[in-house]
Image (cartoon, rainbow, N blue to C red; front, top):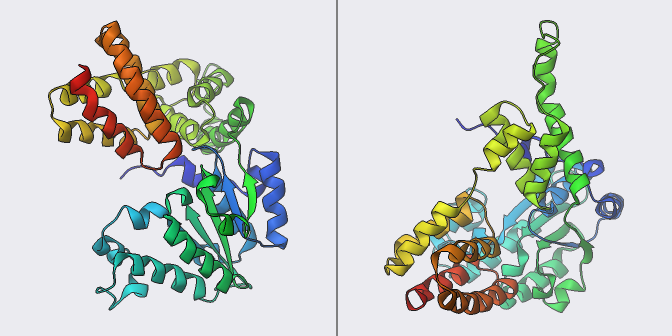
Length: 350
C-alpha cells in the first residue's frame, strides 16, 4: 500500500495558509458566507484553501463540502460519470440523458440537497476555466436559484475564462504563489510533524551524533526546486524523506536532482520523429499525469533538450512552433491537446 500523501495528511487549517491576504478573506467568509472565485497559478494552494474554509465553516465538512473537478465531467464518458459513486444516486435511471443534461442534473441536485449541519453547504468547482460557456450559463442559473442554502466556490488559473454574470456573483480572492520563505515555513511544520513521533521514540537512546531528520539547507533546497509551487514542494519533501530517510541538502539533491525528465523527453521526441504519435502521446501523458508537469513545463524541457539534439535551423523552426503552442497553453485549458499539436509538427522540423 502506498503511503498517504503529505498534501492530504498535512492539509492546512485556515490559520496555516501561507498567504496573509487569503487567510484574511477566507476567515471573514466563515461568518459571512458568500460565493467566491479563488484564482491563481497551479500549486498555489487554491483547493487546499477551500477545504480549510469548509473545515472552519461546517460542523460536518465531509458531508457539507461537495468537490467537483471540472475534469470529472468534461474529460469523462457518460458511463464513467454515471458510475462515479458521488453522482450515481443523482443519475439512477437517467442513462438515456445526454452528457450535457447529466452534468446539469448533477449540479442542480447537488445544490438542492439540504446541508447536513448548519444553514448552508459548499460546492467547490475546481479548474472552472474549463467549463464551456453554455454550461457556465446553466451554472449561473443554479447559483441564482440556490444561493440561500449553497455557497459556490470556483477555483481557476484563468478568471477571465468565466462569464461576467458568474464573476459578478462571486467575490474574487487572488491566491498568489507562496514565496520562498513561506514554502520553507510550511515544509518545516510538516517535517516537524512527521519527525515528532520518531524523535520521541528514539530520544532516550539517541547518541549525541545521531542524524537529524531534516535541516534548514534541505528545506531551502526543496523550496527552491519547487519554484513557488507549494504542492510540488510538499511532494518533493515527501519523496526525499521516503527515499533517503531525511530531508537534508545532500538527500534532497540526490533525490530531486535525479527527478529529471530528459530521458522521457528524448523518448517522446524519438517517437514523434518516427511518426509513432500514439507512443509519443503516451509519454506525454506520463509527463503530465505521472510526473505532474504543466504543459508549459513540458514545452520548456522540449526546448532544452532540442539545444543538443537539433542544429540551429531546426531549433529556429521548433522555437517558432513552440511560440504558437505557448500562446495556446496560456489561453487554453487542455495541455495535452496543445503539446500534442507540437509533437505532430516534429517530423517536418526534424
